[in-house]
Image (cartoon, helix red, strand yellow):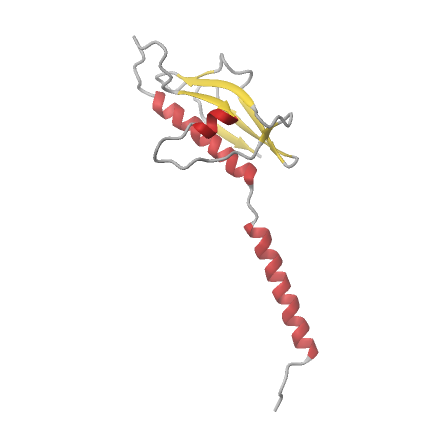
Length: 145
């Protein structure tokens, strides 16, 4: 009858635990670029949803269906029931306070890019870039790796 484990069994167990720990740590690491891209895309889709079917005739200065695509505008654009979200990404030129302009949608959900330089938002985090493309005719949001 054995009273202890052999050295080979102990080494095998230590290597197995180390491998599982390494896999677990890498799986739990957060992808801030992906989270922020999805957050920005959801805010764009929310602004489009609010604009669809909205009759803005006679209401001058209303901002229904509009969204300021800047760090301050997106972080401060939350309703009372939502929790605040802090963005981690920068724009492609590594400006911490990015500003892509103001995006508005009409009553059909078609985006108006007159206050924006382009319809592709390039976000960067730790040297990795991700693009958010807004389709010109439909307003459909596509997140490209």
